[in-house]
Length: 317
Image 1: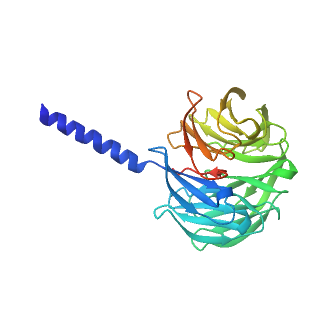
Image 2: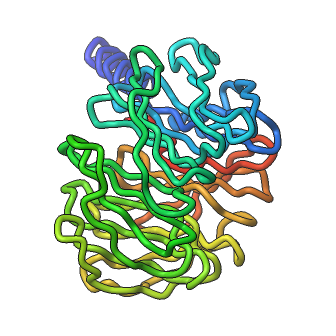
Image 3: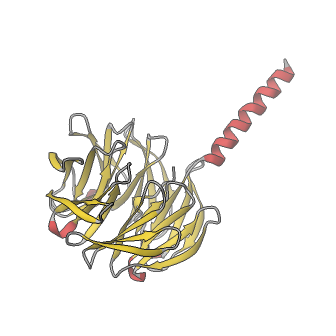
């Protein structure tokens, strides 16, 4: 009996140890501190801080998990963090107003929105060279790439619109009007629905991503910045900058069903691969709130660096 108990304990220990090792990391850009905090989501603590000059803002973790790309507006491009080394390994100049950033599903292309030049730079991930520049609307910010790697969606903040770019030809196929000053974009796992957080109209525009038609407009709270999906795309969580909260939208009924208090000035938001826990970067509190999307409660707060922004997909898969 004792031998079996020891064996059972050993198996359980091995399981939890491997689970902890395999747990993904969250990469939080601290814009005022010129750094990126790396959170081990298994233990809920910052395990490393990487210095990143240029006022880091947007974040995109490559799907293959090898690199994390961080836009650096004041350095006119983005920084490359090697996730294994937890170190800055390259700085890439792209354009004057680099802000929103995304990576293709195959990890081969990096897309960088230029706030000032109304374009998106396409960068080859292997060479870190700009291979194409795509003209879009005025002041592009949030970016989303379709799961089939065919389309790029761009939020044009000052045009109050979202553009759909054909990545094969590098041209805008369609542009549709949304709310006032769209910023964060979120695409569902099937590439069917697109959500735009509209900062100045305090709402979220819901789009049919394939036809680029508006399905609904959902009111949220004050200055919505970005959003993330959880629980098999059934809930959309939206950061509200001006009242320190996250609005929760039922995506079946397209109605707001809850409001979760988080830290002050929440901005970036990203969902853990467990599809339940959602991480929120709080700019004024220098922290990250972890929200349980099922219970709609904050279960943990992690101290990070100064001016935590983390705009984009900042958690590895």
